[in-house]
Image 1 (tube, helix red, strand yellow):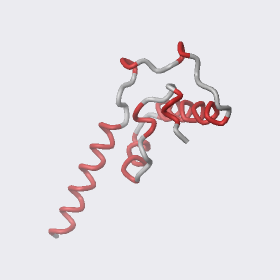
Image 2 (cartoon, rainbow, N blue to C red; image 1 turned 90 degrees about the vertical axis):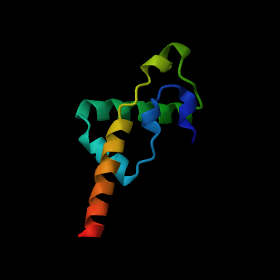
Image 3 (cartoon, rainbow, N blue to C red; image 1 turned 135 degrees about the horizontal axis):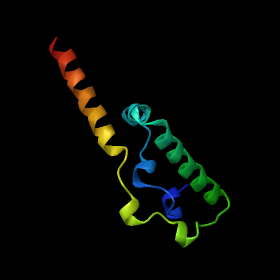
Image 4 (cartoon, rainbow, N blue to C red; image 1 turned 45 degrees about the vertical axis):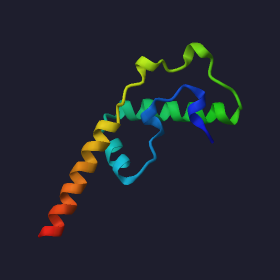
Length: 89
């Protein structure tokens, strides 16, 4: 299923849910997670209905902020530091 064609998702909504992404999601405020879940459910519904979101509801380029990537990067950094520390000690 190719959800990105529905133009209702943000780039970070499409991140594969690795353990690092799951930890980053856990660190987000609940309202941000709820908004993400709403966008994903709406994209799935549109896909199942074989419909496209009306153009006026598409996510505008300037609205597509990376809300999760910086947190995922921090989680990865912490995990790698921990793994390196555990190797040495």
